[in-house]
Image (cartoon, rainbow, N blue to C red; front, side, top):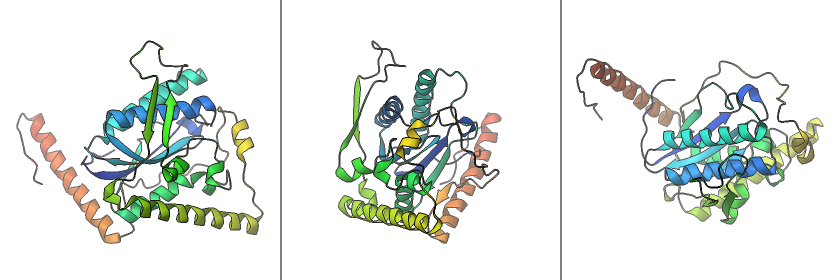
Length: 279
């Protein structure tokens, strides 16, 4: 994976899936609590504003605002804690996450952030697992975000030591940073667009005769299972997202310039010289 700039005050969509597409995050009380606990611990440690997160059975989507340019530390800490916790819960020892790099997409503008918030919230509906977002039995922060309600989680007893340094209980609110605009306006738009996706997919199922898997069936799935569909391979892995073609081009050109500066600085460092990259 090529190097990429890490800048403060940026929005990102973080996505990572479990190894072999296994359902290692299949919803249950212990998994939901552990996901929430590890997310909050990592976000508080690295001053990351979490806008929304949705834990599917074999992957998660999380939209964040990185105030200080520390998202790599957040991602590493969150995924490390959750992988170890879930392996302890499942009695596993092998790698928990897929060997491919975590997907980090920088969201260039407000439209891109709103699109990814809707995508994250409605992922269970778009995958035809449930017909309404609030029916999803796993972690989905939409209801908490819209209601301004805090998320709480207790230290998972199956992994963390009772007398260890980890807090007994953690709490955090999903937040809408001022950079995105007035919170009430953002939430109203998000609610309306989520409802539109639910209606659209309901109409599609009525037209095609397709049915949702349903909450009960999701909960009854084995965590050792995996989807029967064929996984797409060798797809493009976007680094930036924007509805505007020119915003995307500009961001990609900036990334290319950064990589060129990075390579020059790396080569100079190997030779014992110091180079200050142009900004």
